[in-house]
Image 1 (cartoon, rainbow, N blue to C red):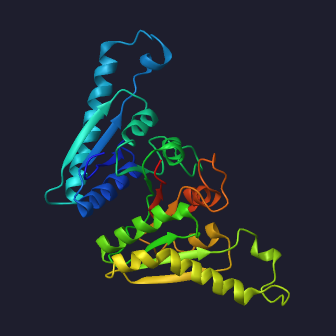
Image 2 (cartoon, helix red, strand yellow):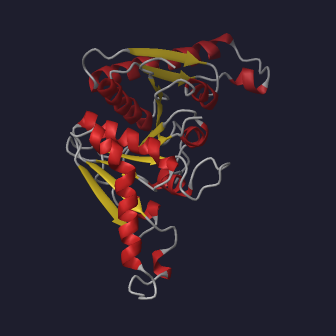
Image 3 (spheres, helix red, strand yellow):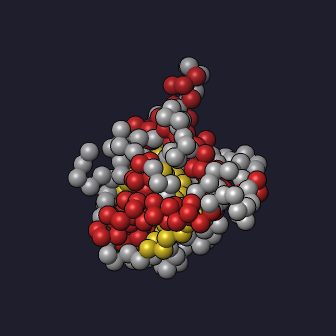
Length: 292
């Protein structure tokens, strides 16, 4: 891996992709990282066998891919004026295969939530879904939603397990680079709240909450010392994580979660909280990974 690994963004010409390119350029500028714009123009003949297509078809495919990359380059430079290093790649590999390969040494993969031809009512495109589950690097999913303001906070989900440590580290870094507050949310039950009574005196709610507050503070301790410029708001709630984190997605600049939760099986691709937020979060969602 390079000293300052690149950010890779998928380009397909869709409105969602345009939002992803803009977000990726701004993020690359903050990290002083190079940006790679990748457009996949898979040729049907290489996938489905020889179709007898004329050469003009392949020429048109290549020309369209180059046009999309040129447009994306213009968008990236407009989003992050200055010395942003932008390179482009047009590949004949399928989009998922190409992006998975690039994720092996990327700082992150950035994708629009929907592709060029979303199905009616589709919440997440197939490429975004596949990369969220299988990429080696962190993956950012960007929706076509209102652009965050300069004051909007970064929000991170903390579950007290080792799986949330990369999310915490990334959240502090992003909040510091953006000069915004960080909201660290610890939702400490996976049980539907409607099935429990918070007033049931047989259950030690006060001591449980005190313990969970201590667990959150312990998870953040080293990072608050490392990033004294970041104002941290610690939130401990008796609620399901996905439900409570969702309440922040219309006011957050970025929501950061780990790929697995405290109760996930080791062979699961994504935890239930992250899977739910993939389909519902309106703000940019960044899924971090544990080192492999």
